[in-house]
Length: 310
Image (cartoon, rainbow, N blue to C red; front, side, top):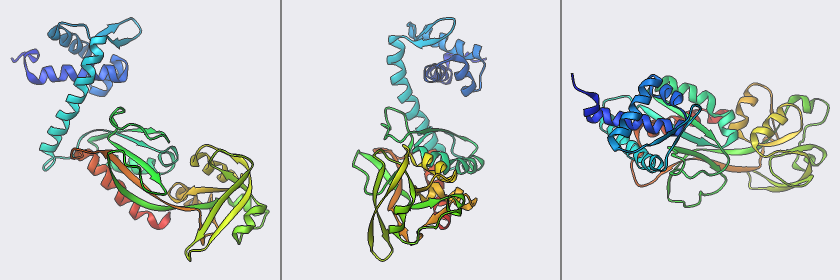
């Protein structure tokens, strides 16, 4: 029988086990991820330490943490594992189902209201790919946070940050209100009618709200309205609007599910607040792994197919 400790594969899996312990914080979490027992993972890390002749983890009864040497080794080993996984995936891409772990970041509103059903369908099509979703309205550093794909929406062009970007879908930001809100008040027929309504703002500011509406004929109208409630993101604005709190400016993809369920109605359908695009962003300088490509293409196809409803 071949001794696993003397094989390249055995040494590689020992390194992978150590990196998983550091990344997920506990031996138990690493074992679940790797599909091994806690004892097996612990033995792998101990074997790696013996091979290197240095302690990589500081162990206490309640926690483990990397030593200074362990931290330095982790940073180099993690990148090496990623490159090796990508190389192996590329070699098998022409004949095998894409596999691996996918780290995706998206804005809070898009991640809460658009992505969940799409992720369920994607996982059904590609069970070999696991997905880790990080919701954050900030633009995260892709390399530092080990992000495979970032989803970002903007009304203009993306700033040049050295990333690779492609458009997934174009959409509009529109006005929406709940049927209950409109039940005892007249729905706005013109932009000027908004002055008599309570608007839900999704940005910081005072009690007054100033913004511009435009229609398909190129006309523009400046609106001044009351904004007694403000929130930090479109996801919160959506929920306040569904609860009958007023009229909200919401991206069409974010509002689509509530509209289809009859929870929201579009107000002033001939007018829109802004046009925007959703981008898929990844690190430049190398071909995207198959797991990233299939997810990006899946999102583009799904969002295009649903465009008529958003």
